[in-house]
Image 1: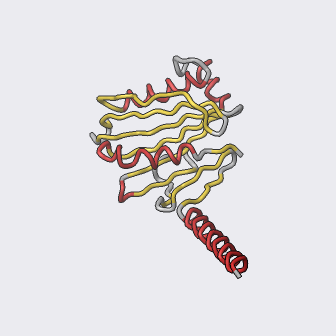
Image 2: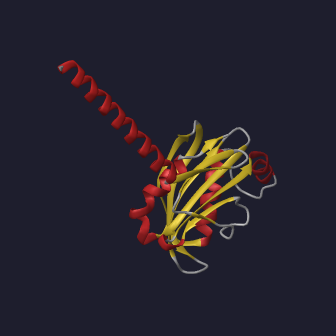
Image 3: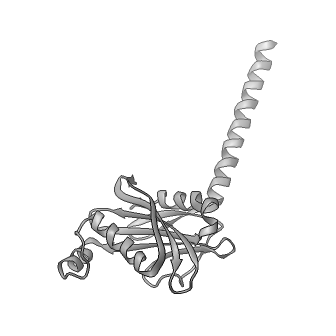
Length: 187
């Protein structure tokens, strides 16, 4: 009798485990969605809402107004950046490091008390990337802001994944910002 009872227990445990895994998978899928663009995809938590008024050049824009949290993805062909360097529109090199310098110099110009930190070179979806933070006071509206940024390159393009919030929300939201940046995948 013991072997039969043990077999029933084992089947119940297996069934229970499968139910838990299925339930967890459903919760995980409901908590986020993969947004697919022409050249890349990115995972967006379900509490974000899509918008189109953050940046006229970005096709992917999301926000959580209640948390004062926003992010966009910008895509720029490498050829366009190389042409801008050749035409002396930027004083930089035509590579990922030069692109990083152009982006951060732009923010130095529009932000007072500018700080660049948490800077590092990394890989995101097997692509070379820079991951960094910036903070300061926006000159346009005198608001203290914290940016978490990823700049990624593939063979044809540079991608900027920019997320931002009020500086006081930095510690609470930086994990959510990083998760979005690291979800980037080429198609």
